[in-house]
Amino acid sequence: MTWEDEAKEIAARRVEAKAQGGDEGIAKQHAKGRLTIRERIAHVTDNKSFQELGEGAGAPEFDDDGNRTGFTPANFVLGFAKVGGRRVIIGGEDFTLKGGSPNPAGLRKSVYSEDVALQYKVPLIRLHEGGGGSVAGSGGGKSKSRPVGDPVFSTPRFVSLAKTLGTIPVASAALGPVAGMPAARLVSSHFTVMAQNAQVLIAGPAVVERATGHKMTKEELGGPDIHTKSGVIDNVAETEEAALDEIAQYLSYMPQNVYEEAPVIPCDDPVDRADDKLLSIVPRERRKPYAMRKIIKSVVDNRSWFEMTRRYGPSLITGLARMGGRPVGILGNDCTYYAGAMTADAARKTRRFIDFCNTFNLPVIALVDEPGFMIGPDSEMSGTIRAGAEAIAAVMNGRVPWASVIVRKVFGVAGAAHFAPGGHVFSWPSAETGALPVEGGVAVAFGRQIAAAEDPDAKRRELEEMLAASQSPFPRAEGFSVHELIDPRETRAKLNEWLDWTWPTLQHQLGPYLRPMA
Image 1 (cartoon, rainbow, N blue to C red):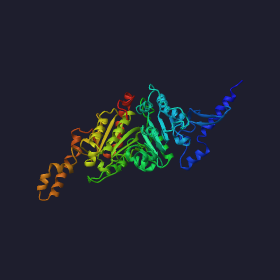
Image 2: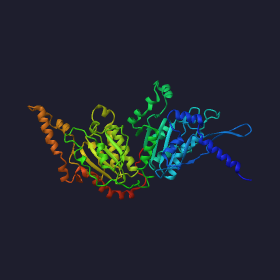
Image 3: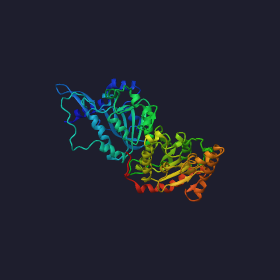
Image 4: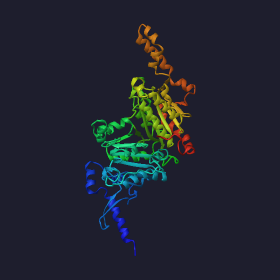
């Protein structure tokens, strides 16, 4: 006697599980221009590396004689895989079954995803499309038993969700409508990306209209234009495939967990490469803008710049890059937005990014052109000073090596968010530093003198030129207020020399960061 019948049953159920919502459900998914969850997993993971967890989880159907007539699989697909040769846990809702709203087995697998990633201490990838719970319950309203909930001694499911943020890299994608609990999971990540045709919602249009009277589409409630500016989403990709590729690129910079160092890769870009364009990229005219991203791309390894959260708090630039093959976090000012001033959103963006770099032991390079906090009534109403002080506190409480390059200006309290304790400071000859920008400082300190002058505009220009000369970087370098005043063309070489010294220190501070990102 053998177990051949049971083995055949196992094989049959595996086939039915991979059928997902059936041919009709898959056709509807493709008609919307969307991939199925299994197609998404296959795209982002290394070829044939996916090993499913709970492939047989689901609900069988039987006839009156006890013969199985069908099988509805769990509508959350989960498993081990590799991305770029490195181990990950990956999972996501199957929208072809119940629109991704969890059936009982799907709910258990989705809850387990954080636990298994923490157990093996590997990055977690979530691919979201679907809603949360239903008033009909996970059984679709078919069961007459009353809901009793989890026992009082059970561990809240948010515990493992929170622990992942301080232990392993978490990257999530919104690849369709994402609402309720999946939306909460989406944003409980270190990196979030959404496809152009996706939406992220606390609740859908029907619930919003019933509760508030607002009649809106999913796109108006939670499309990319909304959530790239709200800070909910870091990046937007034109297609699902591009979104999945961004997740793979993001993870290539990251360690497997907080107990390991970030991966260093071979670098064919000379570490002492000098770019002559840097000598003229900052205009001598103090109010004329320039492109900070061109400086970043010139300084870091070729083709290594990966920007995140571009449209939220746009006066601050954040992203990942490599220097000599080593992953680093990049913080910079974009003077084309509010002259680079720190708004409340930019401050919150800074704090989140710095906490992230500290969590995963990524050295920070700050390219500084900070005129100070954004001023005016809107800035006061948005709580800029509080958000800014919290960003500064995140920098002061940091543990990672830090290098600052003063590209143009550093004024006011907000400037402190670009210089960590023990940080290494370089200065370009275009740098200006002081308590206030010259224009504002002259207006405050010399208002009466300017008003009394025969030619007030000429007097203002004279005073501004005099004070601008006093903010030259040369006296600061002479007084050892910066480590070194450098030729802009030396920036890449100097930063790589600094990293040669500081990179070995990272091994001494691995492990959880006391202020993990939240």
